[in-house]
Figure 1: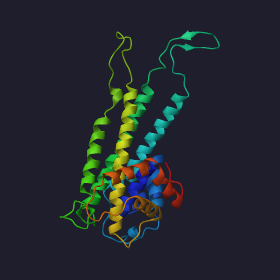
Figure 2 (figure 1 turned 30 degrees about the vertical axis):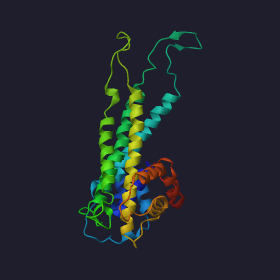
Figure 3 (figure 1 turned 30 degrees about the horizontal axis):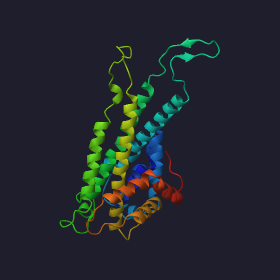
Length: 295
């Protein structure tokens, strides 16, 4: 969740977006905790940005949804994560066996605490929440690569028309987002009777949990592609500099992969950025520079 905010902030910088939509007063009149947390993060990450300051008086009224609505979209996913964590905390501290043996009376009581419905529902909810982070991330990547939607060279290459630049990376992100649209179908909506119809409704919660983990891995790759594209876009805006948090992120990215000059094989570099996110190292480097981000 924090890495998604960092990726979005990098894209705001690369696309010369505005910080106006992250004004805390916008979130305060809606009161969703995730939205308020994300707005705070976006302001922290982009603080003291000379890129954003350079176009503060431009004629653009507002940014596209994928930039302007980061607090609302990322925030909703954070709230979903919070709900999933709450349900899992209850479950992991519960008795889910059958029958239940009551120690005070010695009774053996048959019941249904084994049924996984509470977990199945929040895992399906979590699937959708994580998938949406990837969906909006891919849209930001697309904007970075489209010269008609940015002030950047086509496909973020200095040699458009000759080199492909980062064009194919967006293909990868789009394919992963489309794959997640299949995986996000609610597993808990299905049930097949077994045991001579004695077990005639089941949760399919383990399927939902497995799919959640698969979606998460796909989304980390999508975010890796976004931060690759955003860092490339920021390079083209030099000598203007990004904010304190986004500068820390940009430096961390550039310590792992160099600026893309001529075309090269990018798959290993996408994997390195995937590992940078999944290990927590990207968030750690940014938080070391600006303080702890909020979920």
